Figure 1 (cartoon, rainbow, N blue to C red):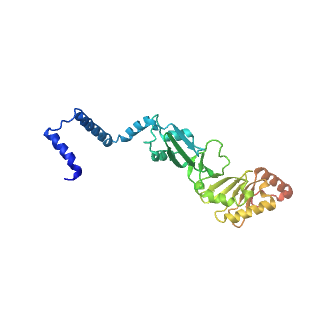
Figure 2 (cartoon, rainbow, N blue to C red):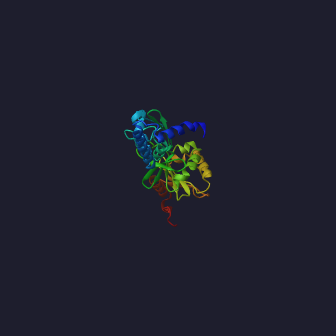
Figure 3 (tube, rainbow, N blue to C red):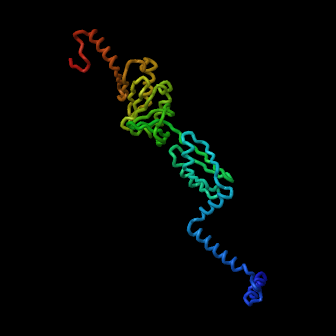
Length: 283
């Protein structure tokens, strides 16, 4: 028998033969150890260990009593606290930071989040919020979108009123590239109040004075070059017009505003007299 086991073996033999009388509390200790072992096994097997750890550590100085939130502008701290999911005795030791991250990331404005435990009793939450690029209008619904077209949240209030307005089906996905192209013409871009996607094929521009520029499906850059040149030479946008139609490659059609059209018709009638024929009437 190995030397290390000789003494325990001799003690056990003397105990069995009655040469050694055990202390009176040994059976009590063995019973308590057995009951404790079965209890511990039941806690682990029943999946109650996290709750036990929470209860014990929370009452020994590790209860979370402070949450530090940073990086939030659009997201309220109350919403973040709610997703953290604390009660009055949540222990920092047993707190699942990974699950808390997932719950916080489910908030509309949150792009990413870091949750860090600072012992003994502080939780740090650092969030990075999504960046709104434009306001997307579908019918009467207004939504804030990112540059890739992902919807962030419905528009509320006037906080983001200065963002570009894009309108129509497909405008959410196509807007970023087109708005960047128009930005290459600063004087024109400064006057655009709305970018309207038509049949998800082409764009209309709505200017600040109500004029609509109808761009072609192809050759947008050439059309924008021509438009800016016309404005520089003739002050096109300052004229009393409703639309500038550039959809046809071989012509540009300008529609006058109603008052201007009536004034022009009156002037032509006075000038031509009996030879005047209203527009569209056969001679």
